[in-house]
Length: 382
Image (cartoon, rainbow, N blue to C red; front, side, top):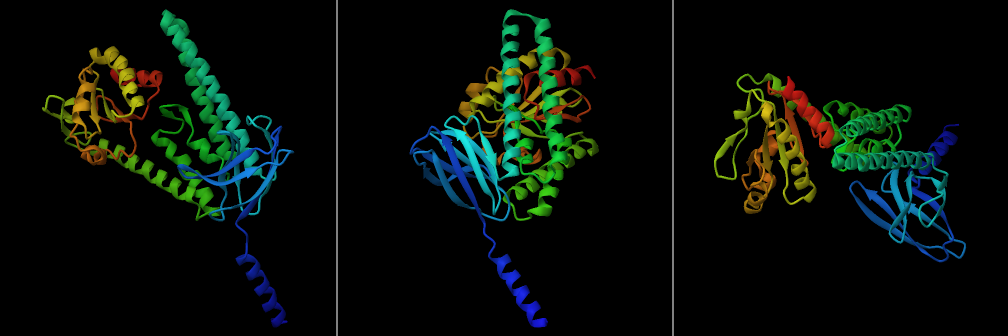
């Protein structure tokens, strides 16, 4: 009996050790005869090509893909530079994909995660189209001075943001162990504003990290989520420090302005103000300054001020750009080594902190113009 049990355990052990980290992918691309398909894997922040396939005369191709670990991973299929299928593949998956050369009429079987990802991507695309449509309408109304319509559209944009966030949270609650929550949490509401960027959003990253870690502890994505959670907690700790410092309600900064005069952040104590970190080499961040200028001009009469920290080693270039901006512009020319970055735990640019008159942080990284203007208006009225 013991001998039989030993043999059985040995067989199970060998079977477990030999578990394949492969997934099978079969593609059928409508009306594509002997075309080239590129299959790529997402390596956290970059795409790596893993194979190039040639379809037969029926548009069919298949491949066995090596997965880097035992957890699900993101794969993408492209034709002529157009992404036609997004997939989440796990070891042992046998997936069939039917699609056309434009990525339309996509049908997936053999992978529940991939089917769910298709639904998520569809919701994200739908939300982006709604945002783009409302933005075009808002621009047209602003140009002709239709303030009533502009106000209505800004309200609709705010409602769209709330609806998208509620939908993403509902997806997380209903699918706690799904990797589709990763693109959902990291999605952008617009080019400058992530859907989940407030301090209180850290709870969602932690919820997802804890869920995925219980099933896939070695996943590279789980490790990234852990870092994200740590950053949120660091920011929360920083926010707590703002309210606990007795002499000043926020950590002070002292840097030279564009006239070589030292400027302290603490000189703004008692006033509502914005602390902005940015890089002048990025055109989008230069445009952000122009949008902020409109808000500044609207509220400077109510005591609102800006302390803008440029992260650059080219002070001449920075000076040529910031001469037009009437607020406090500082730069020490040390770039990423600027001590102010560490003081405020800034890990990505741009970064924006909005303080009330008591020196308490009330908003962080609000880049959408309408929402930022509303936040500034609120701190100026307190």
